[in-house]
Length: 284
Ligand code: CAA
Image (cartoon, rainbow, N blue to C red; front, side, top):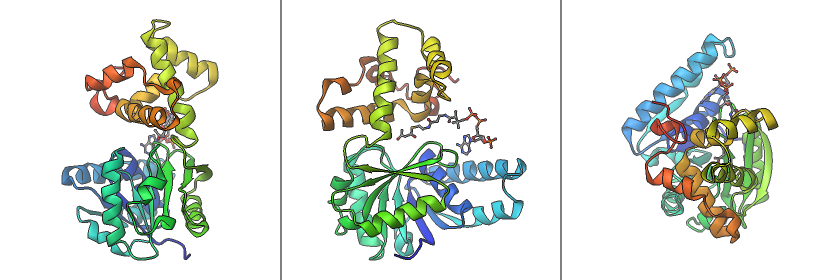
């Protein structure tokens, strides 16, 4: 399979815009799609500010930054993805939404194109059933923020071919990432381990063992994590954490994965984390 030159990214939120930026800075032509024109405007601004920051810190030559920004095209029309070599989906964590999207992408994308999902826990095998090319469907899970975090977790569905795996691995390495490979079981590797830790931090708070500050300080200074688990949950989004816990609970069928009632209550209250200005902590 020839090396990818043009990629499409669906969903211009934190993950999608970060992936688009990363790809453009590494020399790829990028289409970034969102159904919401307002979201595209916000993505354009945040990508431009982030690239400008790298330029002013001397991490990226001015002309490389300008070229990268010129390589990203913003669109609300999925048909623009017809010449993309790889399409990476980064929309909300809903199997139903992703399956509808994969069906559309399958009709639009050229024959050899790879359809990748940035899903943090949903089954790649099931997403692939919405397409006529299950051997070309794969999980390409970036960590937040994609331009900074060094890892891409590649997830092979039941029918993902070796060619698709190798091409996706080469693309991730071209983006400067270290690759790990997971089989297609709920939560894959990173979230299978990370989310129960975050959920346990909520239980620790819920049962009054300690304050949120002490829980986070304990894990930051006690285990050298860059953020405490509750701070990290706010960073990821409490709704995302809850939906991943539900996928773990349903898929692995063990009560140890049941979401903590406090996490559920915060999400019910709209306390979704940094993006809403309030989660475990108040950012307003
Ligand atoms: N885009 C681009 N660059 C960014 C950025 C963004 N969104 N956010 C931060 N950066 C860059 C900064 O510009 C800075 O760059 P330099 O070192 O070159 O100056 C660097 O990252 C460090 O940033 P800050 O100094 O502002 O802040 P920090 O030192 O506290 O680091 C952090 C911020 C990188 C987010 C760090 O706190 C961290 O690593 N946190 C943990 C993040 C994590 O665990 N992510 C994975 C979440 S799990 C996941 O994503 C999987 C899932 O499915 C839920």
